Length: 176
Image (cartoon, rainbow, N blue to C red; front, side, top):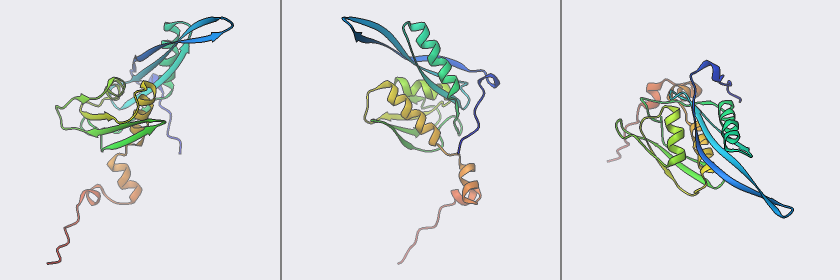
């Protein structure tokens, strides 16, 4: 099921590079330098995207990555500035734990995850990178997790129940 595409012109989108990497292509007795960049774009109110670009100059790579980030925008369900529920997300070898936090906690996260959550509009969250140190894979894993988050109203509608029914806890069974 493909969700509706988000048009960047409809929102005031900010952008920022997360990481810039210099790489070398070796061939015919010489090394040709190239740059790739990972960027984040979002409106700090529930819409965020990441992009990757590569070029022979830093400015070109950053420009391409920002354009790619604006093409890949997603909507993130937020509850009072935090995530709706805990989730462990994976992308290739990277595993990231995203956890809601109480108001006033702030974003406790690594570089890439912090930038993505800030641009998504999350104010309080606890995160932990569980397996990889590759910035691009960590960023992709964070985006996979944000895409997988479910709003309680959406879950109630899918299950054919009310929100109160979902939140109502069953009494403990006492067989004494």
